[in-house]
Image 1 (tube, rainbow over the protein chains, first blue to last red):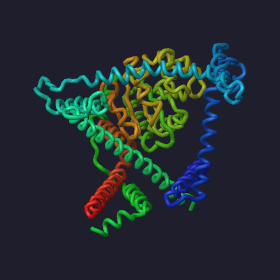
Image 2 (image 1 turned 180 degrees about the vertical axis):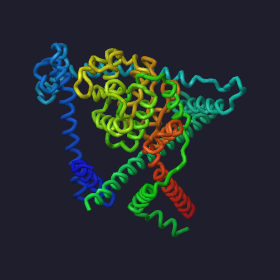
Image 3 (image 1 turned 90 degrees about the horizontal axis):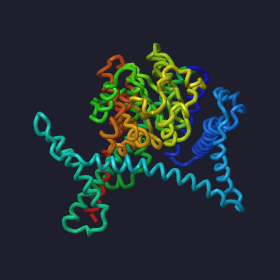
Image 4 (image 1 turned 90 degrees about the vertical axis):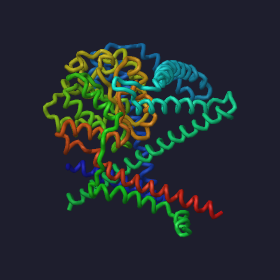
Length: 228
Length: 283
């Protein structure tokens, strides 16, 4: 382990303990780590935005020669003045900072919302609406060359009736009484199972993160041995 | 019973924290392991990668950040091992800015250490991070090299041998996403898989997994859900390729503490419910 790795490990270990100290009660060490995290994150995203969006997508496209020192590929690029349009729209967004011309930002917002909703609508319709309906249209009785596949038939029935029951719970054009009420009630059970599974998975995810941190602290403790 | 009720109702939450910490630490120190078998949804993805002909072109997208490393890193490692063992070509990219570090870490820890014979630019390439989220996928679908004009090291994309056959996303044989949110597996399905009929495989955090189950098996070849999914995939990989029996157990090592912590949580849930019902009856 190099000296640099050791420094990183020690900073990470100290920060982990500072954050964990909140579990006992709020304290200045926790506050320090929290504020440091917020500050570092903000700086990271700002640098990343300049490095990965503004330089390659804007400067390298509009004025390639200005960035050849940091982006070698730009030296073979011809200026693409179409990129001035998104640049202009981006500047219009900043007009919100000046109340007198704040209305100009609506033009940029209109383009953003129009493009996003248009793109999302098509993809969601295809992948989350039509494809999901298609995935629910499955045989309730599965017969294979070997005969009746009881397990798969049962699973398919649970899937199809589960979807129908859950949908009925959200169908408010009919009063939830009698048969409709019974199906709707079954829908609640389906939803409860889904929420339970979601909670179980969330617990697993959080425990996984804790394991990762404790393992990291273990490595940190082992580094004491290297120093001694 | 009254003592139990009083104990649970007045239990300091910090005692629960200590119990969970011990439930994780002790099995981790003593290397407690639990037996695992790949579930059908994991095995299905493993089989899909096995079925690809050698030298298939596979995108491995690192769409996660440092907060979910314990869950996602073992998945990325297992995919890299599997793909290179099968002699597939890996195109490593990231829709998340924080994913680039994870991409580099996989190259450093897995590819360079365990596959020294693999050549950069021929067997694997680092395309790196590009901004744009699903908009990036949308553009890559039509013009891959228009977005990736260089690799992650600044080399012209046309100078990289394994990029010569690539013009659009449809040139790839499979897309594997290791993710923990948006953009991630869902966006790869919506903007690439369903659109171009490109097989998609997902490996996501446990929180995310439940939202992706509906896409299996038609829109998703398989899914690794959380640490358990990663450990199951490692089991499938080691049973087929025993050479990874020592190096390829990152997630399996964590499953022992996971199981013990779950038992402690279950016990607390049961005790909490018992005390609630006992208290209710007494009223």
